Length: 438
Image (cartoon, rainbow, N blue to C red; front, side, top):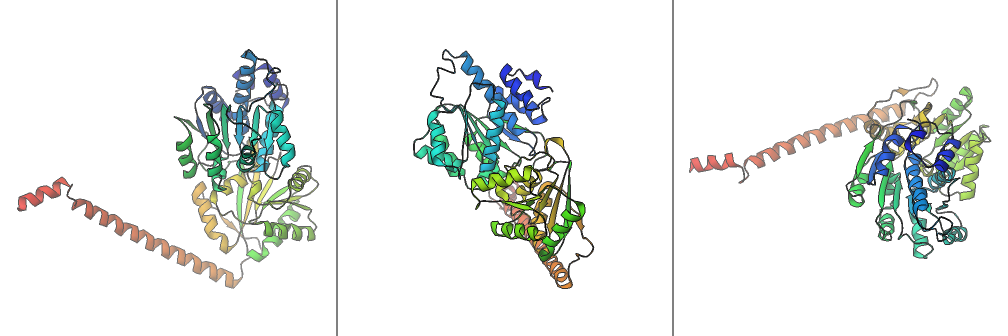
């Protein structure tokens, strides 16, 4: 469907076309009419499918048309009450959403603001005091500004929770609840996420009112255009294999996910010693350093960006070809988001996981989540040594034994429940037999 077909205001349509949009993605085609209907929405779609535009375009269109139809013109309304609030889990995602919404609204009389941890409070306070129509924020920093009375959420008409599952994983539930108490005006709530966990469903029941649900792809799935591979390798030789894969294949732009900030620091240093230019992006880096790392990586000044999961939900790099899991994530859902950094907007990509015996349990969780089994590829010269192979075999046998024990235990528990149900006083057949015996 063409962007011309959905009836956007002339200025918004002009901006959207200036951003290179011609046709709507499936999530946009389905979500925009639902949002326009005024219903709350719970939407699940693969990352990179256009979720930001799916909620931004109808909200911006409604805000500008509402201003135009009001007796007060936009220029007369100098207070710029916050009318739409977008919450994101990370500062990178907040910045990305803000940049997109600023691009969409470049010809509109609307002010877009963004606040997140790591940014300067003074400059953020100035922006808030001057007034914004749409605010994109991380929950923690927004709550700080609310406590300091730097803003008022009483007039919010649209609330968007982007990557809601990640916010819950990061412990933002309490902050979200406090923020919602400050929203006095009746508002429409939209929840968007690439994964659809039980936590998200529980939050949806709590804050959404008779919502419409939307899932344009299989839940917790990865894009079919991303080639995914698993390389079976000793933990101590992962870095060596990574350097060889990058060098031999002449990969020029590689996003590598490490498990911790410490391991990311060590990996970046070792890659540089191998002659591979690298940059770092994790929570201990200042916002300025993180922005510079992303810019250098996007512009090709560095070959590898080593990041922790803080970056998994906010990076939007055009034509990123390679994602490498140096360490598998603790949460299987995060694998979906990491892989989603490549193969965006229908393009192809490659995702590689370097897996050692100690990663096996995490790999099994990922395989179960996305519903596929990976072949363990062994690169010649990187075979496991004898001790590692024995250790892996023993761990597998122990896991299988434990699974069999658990299966037998569950079977016995089920049999016991059925027996108890038959003997229950509420069982009519059982009671009639007792009466006959009497």
